[in-house]
Image (tube, rainbow, N blue to C red; front, side, top):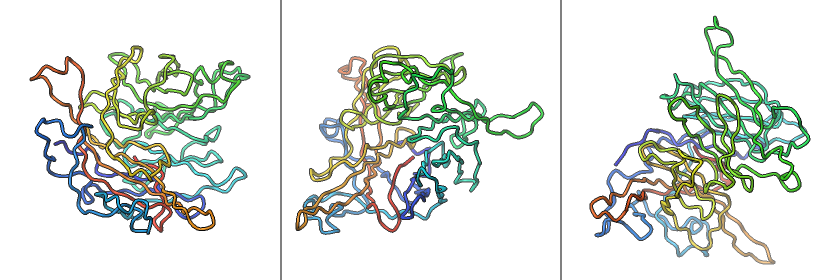
Length: 409
């Protein structure tokens, strides 16, 4: 069983104060999301029919809502532990503007978070160093930003280092059919480098990027512009630049050369993922949440121009029927084939006079993915087969005194 390359599970939490968010860091060496022993397999060596293996947890509780009187799920006993969030590593408040109090906190590498508010002010907070880097102001505030870090060659082996380039993309871009310039304020980059040859320290240089072709394609301007549904980083081969791949709802898949800043269309179909897609070098595959059924899936994106077969890993958590999905789940890569899958739920309980009581909560589950070896029987015929080992699950109630989990990384 592999270890963790990540000590902390980081959470961006919406506090109970308007416009305030915080970073909470769960130390996985003290609060173990993974078991220390491998769960027993079934006699056929394949676990359950779904490829999942249930592992014992530290304590058994009734369903989340049972503790709060929700009789709909009181009979569904789940092996979960309710967690209280640790104290904030930092908190940040948005500046009040005519556009509102919203603040976006987007995860970067390691313990670092990129924060921006409706005015376009940006910072990077490093929880390890307790340090704040003031960034150049965005030329155009982002409604739903995606941040992607491309480390420099010198920083590539340091997972906590953000030096290199930081790309900030608008995931729901407005169409720019009437724009004639080469660059777009909806797609920006910050490059960390020395401003002069004689400078001793690096600084952040701000750049505008060209938009992906669909943003200025007239055929997409008549309807609501396509949104970026998933994205991934694909390292180039020998002599090739690292590529940022984005997939859209209705306009195909594109790649951005992170050195030349040029876009190429890879195909007319969308990638089968939703959200961020993570590369696991030990398995030589990219992992993400399926846009179709929200299960964990994997694919080889190294040859993006060809049709890549999708490998279904499975569903790690089967919620009771009364639990409704509040948001799309998130995937956190913890290293060596281990992940935390974060799912957002709510329940609705009818009350008197037609009123409804709603409760919102988050379930975090640790899973491990390994290759299933079928070489002895020869039944796989070269097909990649993966096995998911389920470890522990935690839950956290939203809108409590310790805030509401917004995202994890």
